Every structure is written in C-alpha cells, then in structure tokens.
Length: 459
Image (tube, rainbow, N blue to C red; front, side, top):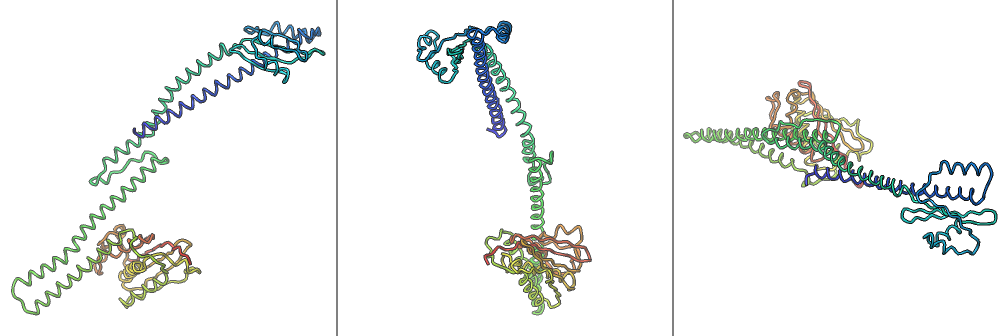
C-alpha cells in the first residue's frame, strides 16, 4: 500500500469516525433531554391535577390554572392522571397490577416524593402530594410523542447525515492527500532524472515556508556538494596523473638518452643525478598523496589525547625556524584566556603539528619571509587561531579552488610547492571537528583562521 493511499484511508477513517461519534453523542443527548423534558411535563400535569381536582380550590388563581389547562395544555397521546390515597400502611399491589407498574415505583414515591418509570413508549411520573391531612400519590402517564415520532425522525436525519458525510469525508481525504503528495511525486520524478551525467539539474523550489520547501533546498544543497565532490575528484585524478607522470616521464627520458649510446662516466653521473632528483620528487608527491588519503577518513583510527594549542604553536615556530632560519614568526599572547584549560583540545598532536606547520610555512614562503603574525584566543567552547601574512595573496577568482589537491594559484609560479599542504590541513582540521577559513587580498596578504573545539577532560 502506497503512503498516499495510507494517508487517504487514515484521514477518511478519522473523519468518518469523528462524524459517527458526534452523531451518536447528539442522538443520546437529545434523547436524554427529551426524556427529562417529558417527565417534567408529566409532573406539571400531575401538580395541576392536584390543585384543581383534589384541592377543589375556587380561588381566582385556581380558576386561571383550570382555564389555562383547558385552553393551552395539549392533550397528550394516551394521557391519564390518577390520584390514589396513600394512608400509612396501605398496600399498592392491586394498583400496580392494574396499571402494570412495579411495586417499587410506589415505594420510591413514598420514600423520595417522586418517581419515574417507562414501559416502551408509555411514560409514568408519580408524585407524593399531601392535601390537608390526607396524603395522595398522583400518577400522570402518557405516550411520549418524541419516542414515537421525533426520535424516529432524528434517527433518519442522522443516518442520512452520516451517509452524506461518508461521501464528503472520502472526497476530502482523497483531494487532501493528493494535494499533499503531488509535490512529493513531482520531486520523485525529478530525482529519477538526475544521474552522474547531469548533476547540474536541481529540484524546482515551489514553496519556501513549509517542510517540502526545506526538503527541496536540502536536497539541492546535497546535489551541490555531490557535484563539487565529482568535480574535485575529476580534477584530483587529472592533476594527480599529471603530477605523477611528469617525473616518471623525466626519469624514463633520461634513461633512454643514457642508453642510446655509450657515455662518459661524468655524463652517466649527471644522468643518474637528474633521475634521482625526479625520483625524490615522485616519492614526495606519492607520500603526500597517501597521507592526504589517510587523513580523509573520520579520524577514529587516530590516537587522540590532550593537546595544549599555545604550546603546540611554540613547538611549530621552533620547528619552522630550524628548517628555514629566514622565517620570522610572531605569536601574539595578548588574547590568551586566563584559564589555560580553554586552550586544551582533544586531538592528535602530530597531525595538528603538521597542519599548523603547513599553514605557517606557506605564510612565510609566500610573504618572502616577512613577519607572520599568529594570534591565539579562546571562548568557553572553541579555540581560535589566526595566521596572518603580508604576502602575494590569492587571486579572487581562484580562492574557491584552494582546497583542491595539486591546485596552485596562478601567482605562485616562482615558489616551490605541490598544492597538497592546504587540502591536507583541511582534512586534519576536519577530523578534529574544527573549521578553517581563508580570506585573502591579492598582493596584500592572506589570513587563515582555524577554530577547534575545546576538549572536555576530567581534570
């Protein structure tokens, strides 16, 4: 059963059940009210009879009541009023048999002052009335016209209403479910058209404020990420093939030239040096690729421990200055938090050391070894590290490609590099649950901000 059909059936059953319950409630409520109202009417008839017939009241009030009774009181079907003297100890068994009433009816009148009873459509109302010293039981009876006529009409009306509601509920359920699921059906048909060959296709956003609009936007965002991943993968394969093929071609070419004819020992040595240099480049690129692939995982295989960021950056500074003494690195400590616990993160120290080394060495290299400023700050939940240089910057139209493996900006031709450092750093920061943001102005410098979550430790 499809979801649309399930929704239609569920809505139909809910609406129809609700109408049936309401109809049943109306029927029972009206019936109970009609019964109570009819018993009150019989009680009024009994009291009127007592005033006129038993009291023999000749006052103007009594005469008016008699006139009102004769003129306005409608004769009820099978109406009858009986007055029975109720001396103490008197038995009412004979009256009960003749009137087909249970003896308990009379006992209830004596005990409570009034009683009610109905036999099919014939209703009885009995009251205890005392005239002077003589007590009476007055019983008014009549056929309930509501029971015989109105109730049957009400029943037919409600049955007809339920039948019409059945059809109305069906059409409402059908059109409601159709209006709800039609956009989903259109989305499904559109999604079927999207494949790896046409990832540029997107779902049309028909609405903005409802759940379907949110679903459409979320799916389109996912397609954007998938399309970007496909493009990145294609670029990666193309660039990797080129980067690996270049040193291999050089090595093979040098070998072919060396073997084409006999050479002097000096020429062989020069050829071997060239081949060795190209082999070393190939080794570095291969290692970088492998390490980049390894850091693309979710980090669960890495050993994470307590790492204090300020100490890590001082270690990175020492390492870079040993590798290249020209490097000038200034660490700003003015924004350090008073609580050193806010500088501690949960991570792999070697990977974080590598990530910051890549960023800071690039800042030194592309600024021609001018001073690189590093600022450290922290909040209750994050550690912030900003690395700023005054170097060549990145062309505005190339910033979006900086995380693509092997990509190098067009203004970096005079600088050595493979285009692996920033993608590798991004992977390392991601597996630590952090963020990396790069802002750059060409020929003025670049700022890299890294945010890492503060670690939760039992101190």
